Amino acid sequence: MNASNPETFADLGLHPKLLAALTALGYEEPTPIQREAIPLLLNGRDVLGQAATGTGKTAAFALPILHQLPEGRRGGRPAALVLVPTRELCVQVSEALHRYGKGRDARVLPIYGGQPIYRQLRELKNGVDVVVATPGRALDHVQRGTLNLDSVSTVVLDEADEMLDMGFADDLEGILSAAPKKRQTVLFSATMPSRISKIARTYLSEPVRVEIEREQVAAGESPRVKQSAYIVPRSHKPAALGRILDVESPTAALVFCRTRAEVEFLAESLIGRGYRAEALHGGMDQKQRDRVMNRLRSEKADLIVATDVAARGLDIEQLTHVVNYDVPSAPESYVHRIGRVGRGGREGVAITLAEPREHRQLKTIERVTKNKIAVQKVPTVADLHARRLEATRAALEDILIAGDLGHVGVVVESLTDEYDVIEVAMAAVKLAHEAVAGPSDEDEIPEAAASSESDTGRGKDKSRGKGAPSARGGQKDRPRSSSGGTARVYVGAGRTGGVRPQDLVGAIAGETRLTGRDIGAIEITDRFSLVEVPADSVDEVVSALRATRIKGQKVQVRPDRDAPSASRPLSRSSSKPPPKSGGKSSPKSVSKSSSKSSGKAASRPRAGG
Ligand code: AMP
Image (tube, rainbow, N blue to C red; front, side, top):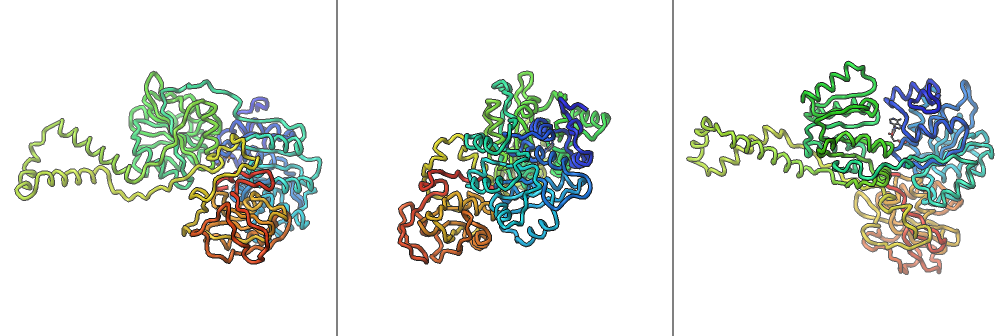
């Protein structure tokens, strides 16, 4: 046990049932943010953590919460409340708590809009240990008296900057004032603008600040390593990696994964693709590891798929490529990993696969290492074909150089009696190509955009938060729909009810599957508002908004009776009359990222929540 310098989860003094869960999940060691935050949280301190998705921040607050749950029978009221900006994150965090806390019989309840409320009421009545909720729905339950916070000893504000951007400040205030004064409060945020510091000053008590960006890495430490990244949705990662490797053709590559389970899975998947891949992780004994290394050194294997722990200290002379299958949890880890190539004056390649939400962590790595990581497009089926044709061409050229073709000349001669020699050559190339390249039945991998907040450079844009209106109405701001069309939703509350664009964006993104990127123009008049959404999501948006409150009020919500707006976009100067109530107020159309009336602005919520 090494409590002052924890290297393992056991060093952190976590409950044995939690240690068992982490081992079963294949987590080999704590990430830097976990190493710093967990001891503080176990000591009851308030923590202000700067960490983005990909750093392991969820386990950093989840494990102490689960550790502190009392043994034996527990009361019905929750001991911890985790607030998150979106429904998607709500599900994700609940699942993580459930996975880690199974052995501790943790009762975890996600609470978000769009889900039948009676189910939430039933679960709350049955008793829960941890509630994970979006602020709108949590406040709704608090006000109804169905969520009692009297027993809450820990409150977590996860992705606090997102929650503020989405207009949840008032809801947070309402919830926190209903929670006991004597409690532990934890705030995690990817950025630390002054409004987050203000929240921290108001709601946290002598917090310890934890961040993973402190250690500056010497600039240009790995100049000979070509660094690139691909933004890929999780479900497409194995296929994307296979395709990238096909195009890159590494002589020898080391692929880093986070967990043992991921190592095993990916090695299998690459073997299925025809690679000679070997798994290497901390669950293997020294003999097994030596065998893997020998296979790579003797060129019997092309790829090693490994965890950080297993790859520590490995020095592989012929390595040409390092691949981060996930974004590393800290910049230092990135530097250590890519330092395996580009040694001794040779050139190396470092490739990182990031999920759209992890784009911010990639930016942090760029900033700390002062190295540019070029974001590339995943090779298309056409790129792959071109690469394979090139390989066939090179193989044929080798045969031409080697000569010794006399024995097949008779075939060419007999065919050229009837066919053109070029045609004969093409047929031969086709035959050779199909034999070498195999069947080409690959589907395209959808292009994933980085999540919106990183595109907009949140945290850098000083004008945001001051109500700077943004250009609107172009394709960029149009909501997405699988059918391509958009439609508008009528919300019976407007400026006089204090409604701002961010309230509408927050309510929709928090209560439905849509994200800020899916929401188009927002028009707010004195008495009502119109929100443009994908046509095929209108019903979902209407029922979700009917079930929730906007600015604490139940409001009338229905599809706008006018024609779908795809053909007639809302415009800033729109003078369209109100749809039904016929109020005299002239509608003001604003971007969802601006609000003149409030003097505040919401930046666009991240894609994928
Ligand atoms: P988060 O930053 O909380 O979204 O976590 C990012 C990913 O890292 C999730 O898939 C976690 O399951 C995984 N993860 C978190 N902590 C660890 C760890 N110590 N070792 C391996 N994987 C981890």
